[in-house]
Length: 79
View (cartoon, rainbow, N blue to C red):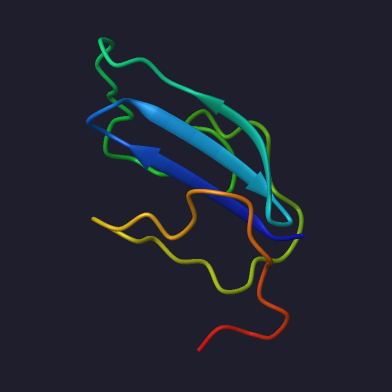
């Protein structure tokens, strides 16, 4: 499974791509987007919804949108 999430702050856009296919988008040009400063990778802030699997090649890009349209996911480990 290849999962990509994108957040574009100025237009408050949030996109989700699963295996290279956009599965959802939401946003508003007038609503403020504040996701806070905490990222929870193994459940929510209360310890619920625990992840029981493995993650590989986890990356955060700041200031660049890696994917903005459907794409072919990498077939090899990223370097």
